[in-house]
Amino acid sequence: MTVPRGRDRFHRQKLNSWIGEVGQERLAGASVLITRVGGLGGPLAQSLVLAGVGRLVIHHEGTLDPEDTHRMVLMDPGRVGEPRAPQAAESLRRINPDLRLEYSEARITPDSARAALGTCDLAIGAAPTFEERLTLNSAARATGKPYLDAAMCGDEGQVMLVHPTEGACLECLLAEPPPWPVDFPVVAPVSATIGNLAAWIALRVLTTAADLPWGRYIHFDFPRLALTHYTVPRRTNCGTCLD
Ligand SMILES: [Zn+2]
Image 1 (cartoon, rainbow, N blue to C red):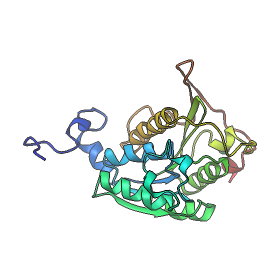
Image 2 (cartoon, rainbow, N blue to C red):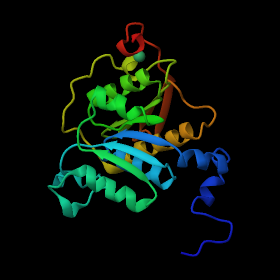
Image 3 (tube, rainbow, N blue to C red):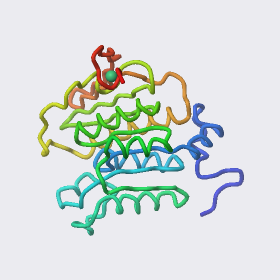
Image 4 (cartoon, rainbow, N blue to C red):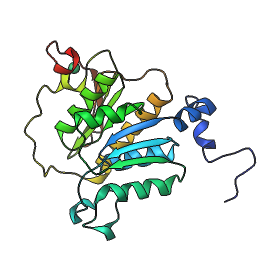
């Protein structure tokens, strides 16, 4: 590939004033933990790797089902029945061969989350279960790392950025995981849009951009084309914030 003199693959990206040379170097030196790289976390991870984030640690359990393939962009429909995490890892390494990537086929636990966060700058929860997202939220507060939560259902999605020490956390918003069906509705444009909204916020965190939406609940209602957000109040009896 011929690249004009003085340009590298991130030339157009660095034209964003909040990235530039310094931000690009920060992205190259950054490590991010992501739980689940399916319909939402897959496009999210893809965008982080395209942007030049240097290292990812991903947790994704299970094998590929035929019904996953309408939304999981990192998976190969020709490899139904095979473990999902290695397929995601191969796709991400193809995007950037310089990527440093570790993956686990095990579901995240409090211990594995804390251990991984010892070497990561940011935790991102893109899991379809509240338990995994709350586990990552607590581990991030315990290790003093920022946590970015992203989720969707049907035609709506939400993102929340949790500060390492201050303001509300995800457990302030969700004291107990609500009853939730395994088979909730998913259409890929919604999961990919919410994943990429979260990826944009992650890049802003990793480049230490100004005006980060700490402690804000961001909700996207697709049929109404409405993006709303508000600051989540800290809950006085939140187990994570009390620790
Ligand atoms: Zn809390």
